[in-house]
Image (cartoon, rainbow, N blue to C red):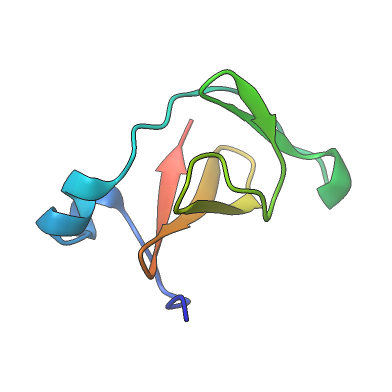
Length: 79
């Protein structure tokens, strides 16, 4: 089960951070309506709960950041 605590990439253990697949966020749309939110990751559109790369889940899209998870760690990225 994924821990609910959200950390920054710098707070993740080194071994987990080294295994984390590369993600390039090149665009985003935030809306009060969850169905209208999306991120462009590695050139493709993803919505909340989708998996942009194997092992990484997009949990929440915020106004200028997103929460993803990898190997039991929830982490935040800004864009």
